[in-house]
Image 1 (spheres, rainbow, N blue to C red):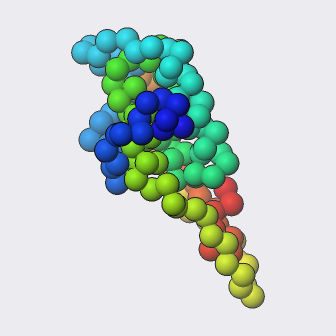
Image 2: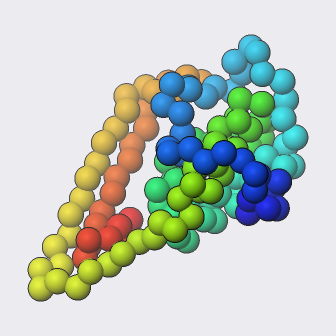
Length: 134
């Protein structure tokens, strides 16, 4: 994916998203981005998040909201997620056998955190055998 989008020389980062950046549909500063390239990039990230990289799921969900009208701030956020993947290519999900395959769940919500429509955001994680299953 890095090669496909010309990001093989990008500098790695330690997190998939910048916590200091709040995305919105129009920040009043950013110009429009190439919509076709943006949708191809977010589609690739979505495929990775579903198949092998649940650690990027939250950020992928945040950037795919802008697929219909992306701007440069959105593109920067997408590229950051690719830079994160570059730095952590060897991460994977490990399931360990144990006598007690207890299901463990975590949940959290952000109240009215969406700057465009003030919707709340909910996230959850369920683990079994020391690995995420949902």
